[in-house]
Picture 1: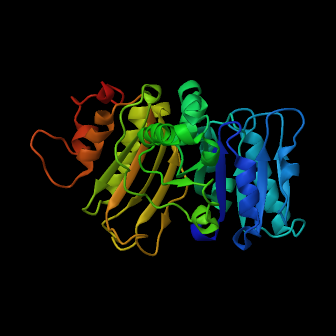
Picture 2: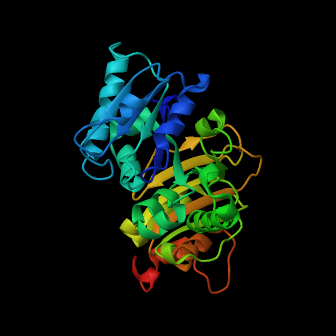
Picture 3: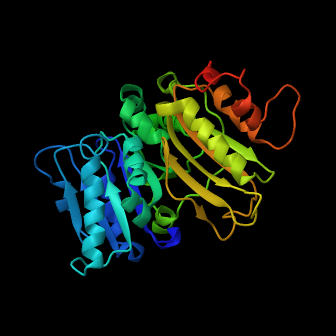
Length: 349
C-alpha cells in the first residue's frame, strides 16, 4: 500500500482533566470528521469515556484496564489490525481516519513506537499528528510535578490551551505568560492554539503537520532540564545516503534517549518534493514524498526530541551532514570510518 493511501491516525493526549473528551466531541460535530472512528484508552476496570461521545456517527472503541504507553501497546496493535480486517471484510462501516484519545497518564513515545514498529499497522496507518491539550488553570503546576505531562508536551505536533476562560482575570496575564514560556521551552516548534477562546478548527486538527519555525526562545525552566526539542535547518539539498547515515548514527549515539524525530528533508535526487519523516525512538514510519513544499520554503527542517542529551551532541552530527567542508570539523564518513573517532555514546561526552 502506498503511504498516501494509508489511514491517517490522530493522537489526542494531555494530562488528566485537560479536556480531551470535550474537544474531541466538538470536533466530531464537524462534517470533516463524520467518517472518523474513535479509540478511547482509559485507566480503570470500568470504561466510561467512550460513552460520552455525543456526535459520533460511526463507532467508539474502548481499551480499558491499562495505559497504552505500557500495558496496552500490544492491545492497540491488535485493535488497529482488527479494525482494518473488519472494515475490509465489510463487517464494519467504512472509516477514513482514526482518532486515538490516550489516558491522561500516557507517555506518547511508546505509543508512537508501537504504531511504527508493527509492519501491518505501519503499512495501513500513518501518524497524522499528535495534539496535546494543556489545562491553563493547572498547567504550570502539572508540568512541574508530572514527567508524563512534560513528555506529552515535548512530543506534540500541536498544542492546545484549554480552560483559559476559567483563569481568574487578575491572574490571567501572568499565569498564561508563564505557561506559554514553559511550553515554548519544552517544545519550541509546535503551534499553540487557545481552544477556550474558540473551537479548534477541524481543518487545522486534520492537517498533517509541517514543521513550523521555532517560537521565540523562553527562559530556561527548571522542570524541563532533561527534555529538549532541537530544531535544525539546512538550505542545501542533502544526499539520500548521507541522510540515512546521519539517522543511523543518531540512533546509535542516543539510543533510548532519542524520543522522536520528525522533519521535511530536501533530498538531492528530487529537491522539489520534500520527504516527510516521522520516527519514534529507533523506528520510522514509512517516509512520504510530498507533492510540494507546504509553505513554499525549500529547506530541510528537522526536529529531534531527546531526554537527557545536550544540543551539542546532536549538532555535531548535524553539522557533519553538511556537504560544505569546514576546518576542524569531520564529515559523516570521518565520524563512521575513522578508527580513532569516539564510538557511539562517546560522542555524547
